[in-house]
Length: 329
Ligand SMILES: C[S@@+](CC[C@H](N)C(=O)[O-])C[C@H]1O[C@@H](n2cnc3c(N)ncnc32)[C@H](O)[C@@H]1O
Image (cartoon, rainbow, N blue to C red; front, top):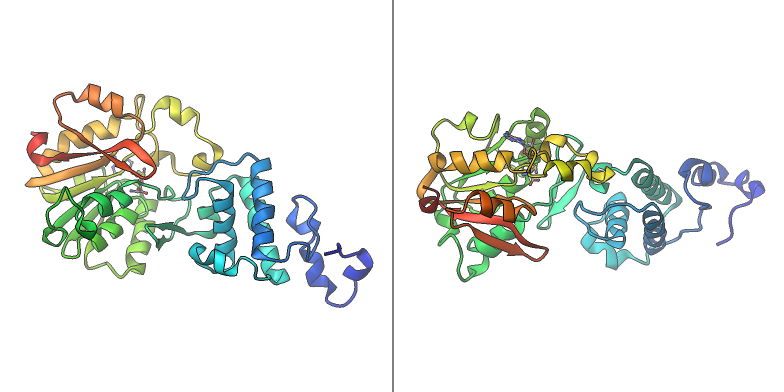
């Protein structure tokens, strides 16, 4: 479609059209009405994202998926509905909203999830903002694949309905606590985070899922707020990035709370404490699931006496371990 001339822009309906133009968007040369469909907007976003060399590590792993997520969210569509509407036309106002988001994504380098205050995990939406890391833990998938979901052979837990107490340490947005509450329908879940902002976000998510009666949130340092409580299952995605990794974080991750990443010099400061303190908080036939990122070699070296079982997911190998309480000592 031809770019609107200045003359046209001052004519009928011009004020709204003009707003979608260069001055507002501030990116490359997009004229009002040039990008007509959702697919056009995604195609345009992909070009901008690739040119800007963005990092994709927050729910999407490539520019096309990131663009489809952003466009869908701006238009109040579930990203899974994108294909259905790919060739639908957008209004000028909708186009402006999307172009503004593309502009923000490129110029601020904030994760897309912060720009739309939403992320999906295992198909469920969670509210997020800069007070919490954008959820992407492998533990969500592992609950389904290794903890009795869909009659999995070799499940690490015999019967999900028999699980009574779960602890989510380092809960952030509360996403894993909420997934655990869904996965273990008869369990109560305690969730701890040291960050006041994280607990506020988690409370919002717990409220949105109506789980206030089953999930209790605690602000504090690891096990400190829990007294001598014991659990059938402890899940945790603690901070585990080492000093070298912290120095190399892309801008997208630097927009997230440092507290969510920083695991000290070798990345294992918090993991060590969890392994040391977990035996006092597990039932005799319970177990611990802990994500540690790429530090498997270091953990195996630091704890040679522990028979850690490394769990793989579709996108990870050896980044999460399981250990039964009986083996923790
Ligand atoms: C990697 S994030 C995980 C958040 C969430 N579980 C997820 O998977 O998206 C780690 C979280 O641990 C919290 N944290 C860091 N040190 C902590 C500590 N000593 N005690 C409790 N929480 C801590 C951070 O505030 C952050 O929310």
